[in-house]
Amino acid sequence: MKITRVEALWLQVPIPPAQQHVSDFGRAATFDSALVRIDTDAGLSGWGEAKVSAGSFGDYHGVVAIINQEFAPRLVGQDARDITRHWESLYSGTRDHYALARGHVFPAMSRRGASISAISGIDIALWDILGKSLNVPVWQLLGGRRSARMPAYASGGWADAAGIGKQLLDYVVRGGFGAVKMRIGVFDGSPAASAKRVIAARAALGPDIGLMCDAHGTFTVSEAKQFCHLVRDCNLSWFEEPVTADDKRGLAEVRACTHIPIASGESDATRFDFRDLIEHRAADILQPDLAICGGITEAMRIGALASAANLRMAPHLWAGAPAFAAGLHVAAASPSAHILEFSLGANPMIHELVEERFEVKDGLLDIPERPGLGITVREDFVARYRK
Image 1 (cartoon, rainbow, N blue to C red):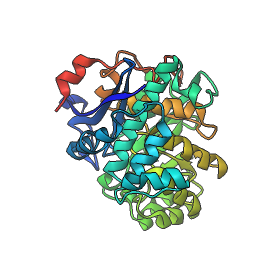
Image 2 (cartoon, rainbow, N blue to C red):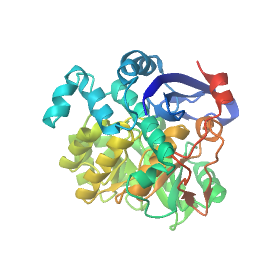
Image 3 (tube, rainbow, N blue to C red):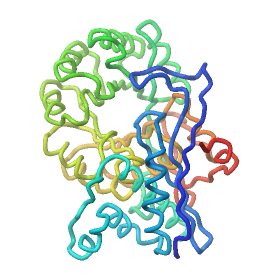
């Protein structure tokens, strides 16, 4: 089953002003992503997604160029089913023959950032093709799922202290969620201001709804410690990205000073970054983003590392439908995964890009049973919003 075409497109979907939110990333006026399509001579096509930002918008000129101009010529004519071979080959670049022959990596200098995002999108699409070719969902190829449904948490929470309780309670009602996540950090102005919003949220939610906080890596170590002290009685399920992902020792310092579980990883790429998180004892929950970390292949390796270290995994799923679906399959097949992120921000790339609907009922999300990723991309949507 030979690859006949690899193409990446930058999709940019405007978000209506009434549905836009403002965070440390700025105002979310569009939802952007790189959609990857791989065609084969068997008549099967696979869909993937590559991201250059953990948020909903960004500049995708670079990652699209890497896929279309650098990686596509190397993949055309190859067997689409040799997924591991393609991952290792793209990661090691011109020295791939050494890597494949000798059993260890010879990575290209661009082994982080846009290049790994590009590999992520290609990898997801290849798994989609493999599942379709065998008429089975991807989770079955990964060893089977633990259950047909998994718990999900509502992800959003940008309102001020006066409105955050109502905003999060509205989330709970919409999907029967048993847990919610809110944004904090530098856009609040100070750790004390962030803590004020969290304390208000906990008061409104009561003791039985799980509450997570995400600082997007915007605190310094000392600010993160101060925040942890101020919310020590709020029974947080986790504190996400307290400090920048570049400061794993600082992250470990924050973790050592608090009883609040620390989550991190959405900005990290490859199993090697997650190995460093584990070795520094910097996190309790690992959060690979399937469109950033290296795709399904690498996320399964990361899940194995988490399991070996007795840590949990909760994939970062603020993405379009291909990466979101990929995360569902990986989480379902990974013994370390325990909960799914479900965006309550405006996300047309999940809800409008594909024909299928992802819905949370009673706090649970169905794991797709359709072949491959289980998604059907709407070509009219792609044509309308390709940039």
